[in-house]
Image 1 (cartoon, rainbow, N blue to C red):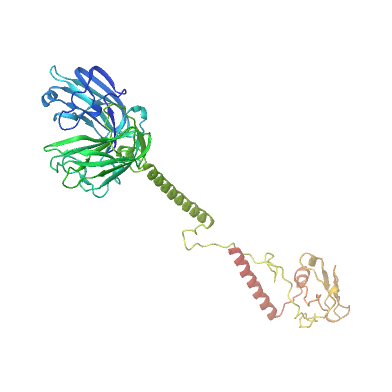
Image 2 (spheres, rainbow, N blue to C red; image 1 turned 60 degrees about the vertical axis):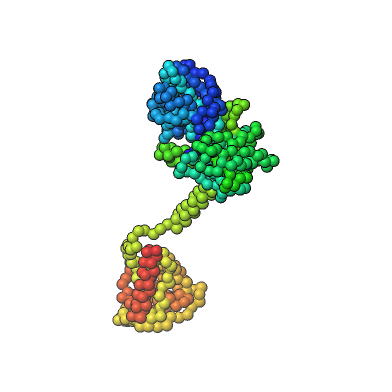
Length: 501
């Protein structure tokens, strides 16, 4: 059972057609209490009415004067032009359900009833009650009905209250002295609706109610000797400001007196929180939509007021939304940080064994050359440079030490400017050397001529091996070749590592 809106038959939003007459002569009929607001509409001939509402279920209730009279009357109920089932078995009394429709889509609907009473019977309409799905404005002139099992009352009862859900009548009951019900509500008046059951003690008892901490007001509890009386008004508050109020009800009886019972609370100009039914879950992605429904009721001298107590749902809803927002921000923050980390630290390729092929290496054409990308190398030291002999053989010698200013030898392109001419004779070999840079020149007529050297004892092998146009048949000793080849291989390894990286 959910909180609902009850619209009295006197509401101006109900559009009547045909012969309808107001009446109020059935207050004591049956065991279901008086009509709502003590008013009825009576159709003595063909008549109808329509009402537009926004909700998921609806009930039309009326008064049955006698089983015979109701069975002789005919009527139909429809929503949006489609008929829905009506009740065929009745008990005489007020507040009887004439027709009911459930599982409606949460949108606006048009409710219609067409009555066709017989010549010796009448059709009595009392109220419309529906479960709203969206906000209801105060100008709808409705009254909020809070059933005893509504979630708003979950924390209102103290542990001494019992829920009677498996037998008639259905409601809440307490038989413990000083047991209480505390309920916070918004509205201009409140009425407490209970029941009497002869199966429980019928000795009179009392209870009190207090609004906003004012002096408690005493109200009686008068038991009955037989039967059941439903829909009984236990007390009704006076007019209240349209704001939040706190109701406290205290039972003063015991287990030997009439118990305090509750069927529902009626709140005029009240507010309720309604949850959208499952139909909306299927058509939208929202999991829970809560809306506050405001309603107002037309006041009358005999209006019934009922106590209501509700939990402050605004605080609950606010806390829920706040917690959900914090959770969403946490999730988005984690995803943002994770994406930034992956962007700065990308994962390696899926294959663990990715082979990289280095670029082919072509060794330099010149002997003892070093790759320019690594560093420039000096020529090898002329530790074993032999003099020229008659047979063209070579022997080792120690190069002379000369001044630094006279022994600077340029490499690369400057070496190409060196031009040496060597003349070999069997008797009296003459060596002449000319250069664009200062070098040590052998004396003419000397038997053995020494090649050009630098201040550090290096021989210009570039000029000997590359610049001379005449073959010189000069080979370095095996130790020099082995050392230079090792350095050459080391240079190749360094270059390969650079290319691979």
